[in-house]
Length: 324
Ligand code: NI
Image (cartoon, rainbow, N blue to C red; front, side, top):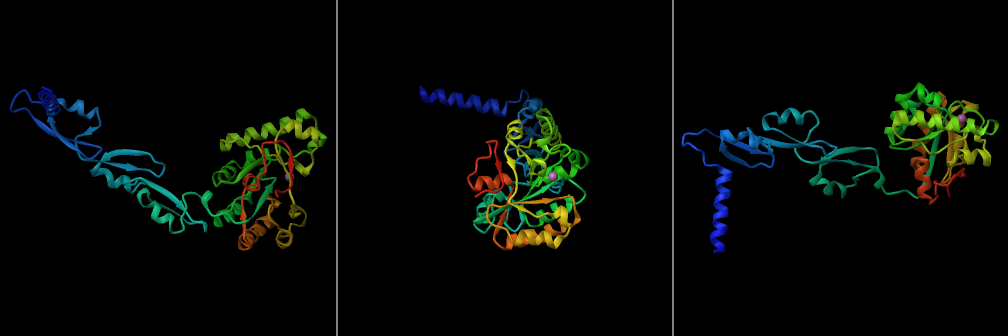
């Protein structure tokens, strides 16, 4: 009895799927599914099928690097594939020397065993690391510094002045999109110990708003202009203050070689290095400092990453001049 019931159920299913066309001469057609299957159906039930993921011509699934997939007609696939879509799921992989590649997800393991990584965050960490920081920009010299950092796959932190961020929004966005850390250096660079608490709040909040409007992310690190702060300022800002352990005096010397020397003759693990992306000489110095530090075995990381590597909690509003 049980067997008969399942037989009948099965028959019903077959009838409903293939639909007995009411008249022998009724028109049939072939429909195709995104999963690769196909079926012959009555023309009159076409809309039921097309509303449920079936198509009237062969289709394939295509993918973007961001894991978006789409079902398209096979005949159009080539156009999509030449426009940045892929015929199988893909991932972007990275090498410590800055190389990147897009490969099929199914092959990723092979590449990972050959010195590639799923993310720069997975690179084997060197023992030594420092944070390059650039203040008072963005300026017309910032792109040259970003080009250099990009070339060596190095990171830095930019403590931007709100008014300059408004003048160079594209440069700021580029820095942010490259994984640079963006910190707050006030709206127009006053000495925070010489202004009222409400002015300190205004200086920092307005700048954070400007940065957030451009990058979509609100900065939480603050560098007080001239390194000048006291407990009131710190309390009002309620944010970690990032000072420095190597002052290149690049603003004073405006000399690339002197800036290079001040870094390379003093640098040690955990240092925070102060420069200003306002000068051609600093951009020039950066092009020497970055490869030289990498050559000496330093990872160039953002302030937040340096703090994390050294086990320093940045959620507490206190001042830091280096991380040990
Ligand atoms: Ni400054």
